[in-house]
Length: 229
Image (cartoon, rainbow, N blue to C red; front, side, top):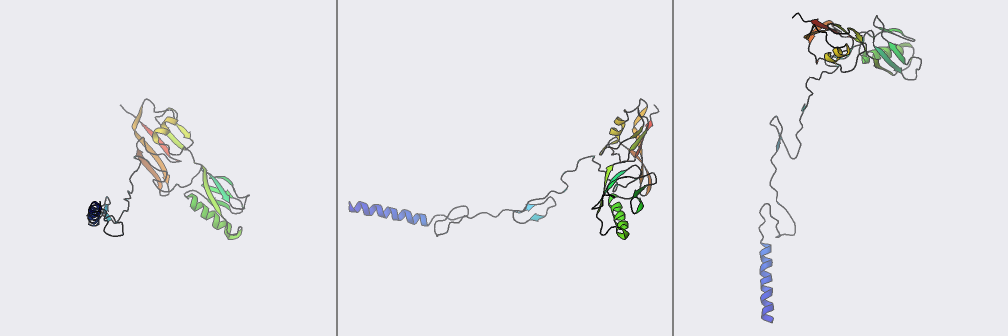
């Protein structure tokens, strides 16, 4: 009985020795020390689309990954400038007599209590805020806080070969095709590929030959030409 017990203890000792010499190459768990460690292969660097390596685990940032084709924002040809027909909501903090809706008149002016006429034509809303603020601060209101927002854009006009030419309220994001639809559609003689827009800018009058997906701006005059054959 004793020899058998001694033999069993010898086999157990041999097995424990084998465990102590377990392979601890990368990817295996070593039992030869008191620490439990796992060897991990180094991770290759992530590469940006430009070819520049990013250290560690940084993510790749894709800039300008998506742009809506054909989208033309109202700001595409510069900041929107005010003109006759625009209606503005002007708010002056703690001054209810000055806070109201103002219409830009035919001369491009708005009439504000205390300071009189202020030129709006050709100005942006931020520029008009600054002009009103400066004039109020000069004599009437200490450190005035002024905001200007567009309540209603001036209309656009459509002429030529459409079924109902005339003046129409501006709708944000409307294209030439949308404007033609509002005017009843093209006439039978319309040249759908020959559309011009006349637009007033800070530099003067601009004339553009445009396609149907071109975005209309407030105050534009659209002219659909006649088809000759």
